[in-house]
Image (tube, rainbow, N blue to C red; front, side, top):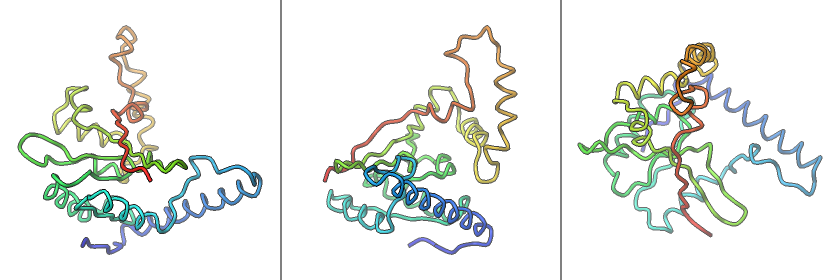
Length: 212
């Protein structure tokens, strides 16, 4: 059981999230009103209230012995995240991984001395198809580090410069643009790193969890 207290520092983020959800719900109803025979676009998908409970039952049916669905209102609650990471390290052998859209979970510690990182699945690429298939996208952190030959400190710095709840991406746009302008144009394109496109090119692997 994790501490679910809404700290004062997270109240503004919680309020913002509620406004975004309400805005998306209004867009869905507007789409249905204008297109009675068509489903809303994928970006308008919003998980139903009982989705977490249903997903828990599904994973229990496939004999997942440990499964915790935890939602914190307001990103950056370090105490909550450390509790989840600690649980994941303890039960990593029976754990599929962490499903989140919080970049802080990418700062994932080693789960043992073999330098194996916790598996991280992007909730923004969470897909439940009409054919009854549930698909997740895994961000492979080890391959990401190896690709750019980064140690742990450099990797953490890179993630920080991609933007987070403390240093928003919008505040880093000028910094990213300066890096792009300062790149050596004689360098092959394959060796250039664009911070703007970096996140979209993260190593991904689709995992089919369950078929109804």
